[in-house]
Length: 456
Image 1 (tube, rainbow, N blue to C red):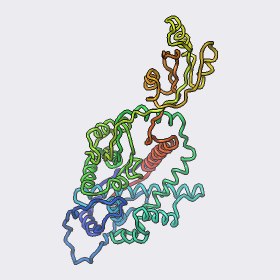
Image 2 (cartoon, helix red, strand yellow):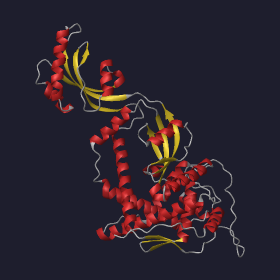
Image 3 (cartoon, rainbow, N blue to C red):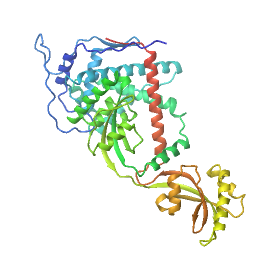
């Protein structure tokens, strides 16, 4: 196994790259989200030219920016990717953010080379087709153009006018779609989301239903990927500045975030306290809807969160209950009450699950067992509400006295109620997506560790 060599900053020619990018990005961003009007990007003096240069994007003297397993990433490739990154994220180049843009562009190019090398190896070894065809890339472009309310030709022309070669964009689309297709094809069919995982997720939602809920978008900078925690914090500050100046959050998230939500523009959806890192929870408590957080440092990186909306807890949880009852009159004697309670107390250890409840109760004379079905906790009798709130799925209550008798209540299921609660299939898809994203991240990490990577 070959070890990766340390990566050094590719800084040569930074001033000239900045001058070129400022000159070449005169048109609005092609990002889907429309940024508000903003001031012109800061003007940066370019190095003195030996002779007058023609208008428009200028070619950069080509050199080697990186070598990935003997494949060269040229300085032209790097400049093109920087232009594409800025065009699709809405960022404007400045002296402060140029190193971050440059490093992100270089990292993405290195990752794509590793991905395409692996895909070509698999295609050759297994004699299958994985890499997206030209037709499939054209279909992606048509979809992106439609979402931007443009034709494919208009979108392509917009890129060309910003000094971006279409081959650069097509290469990015091809690598991304091919890699996602390979991960889905290799692992998706064998990945199983168990009912216990879905029920556990539903239970967490139900238990947090009464807590405040936040609609959140995120950008996560992985400290290990960007070169350390200090780099991540500084990078987050630069991104926040750009978003405050009008760069759309979703576009920035797609290009810079290491989270699985990057593909959806950083959209996390509705969450409750406890679903994200404690440091993020603390920040969310202080934000108002429409506000952007400061950099939030966590164990392995830095978050930027945008609070889109906030709502009070619904207190709506739905439980699936079964019961065992010993019928008693409302005016039963204390001796009768004590006898019924002992009967149920002795039975409780013999009930190992909701599935065994009725069979166990059927062996005891004088008891009635049955399925109460699903109900909102707030619709239950007060004595049953307390048990349903406190018990986890699979647990059984102590004897509960009502006017109708003495009862044992078993909680067989618990989920969040209300119109915004995700259903079974949505939860399964969300968990599957999270696991596939984690698999893809580990796969690429292993490719990096095995590769020989040099930057100049």
